[in-house]
Length: 191
Ligand SMILES: [Zn+2]
Image (cartoon, rainbow, N blue to C red; front, side):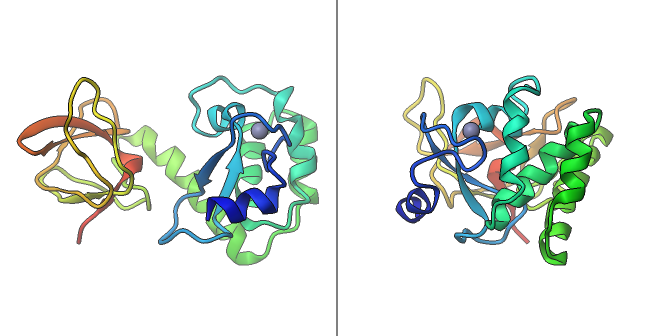
């Protein structure tokens, strides 16, 4: 998959065209990885999307170009970032210029709702399903647990989770008898 995406993107970030430290990024919510919902992006753009860095308006000028991408995942991420920049008139204009089919637009909007719901103390898994204490979840990513040889591999089932107070991005669960903190975006609720 990564190889296909690198070919598509010509080894460049699909948002800003930078060639530095590209990573595969899954655009959520989604039920399975496809070429349409995964994109290659650089660290800088990742920080903007994941909000680990303050919004960098100058850098995000790259969105003026990425609005023309034919890749649904790129359109969705571009559209969501532009919405966070809505104080900038060029961003609003760019949103108006975008062409997205109904399905892609609904997908993009679903991600925005997830963002605002976070403010209301709702804990959600990678697909936007609400998580409650006592639920079981499946890891959607292999996690590195600092200072431990614990294997928290993709697909591991974590039973009887606890919600971390005042932080809707985190839950706690036991893996191999050890309690660890897990980011909600890396789990899928088990029904
Ligand atoms: Zn980038």
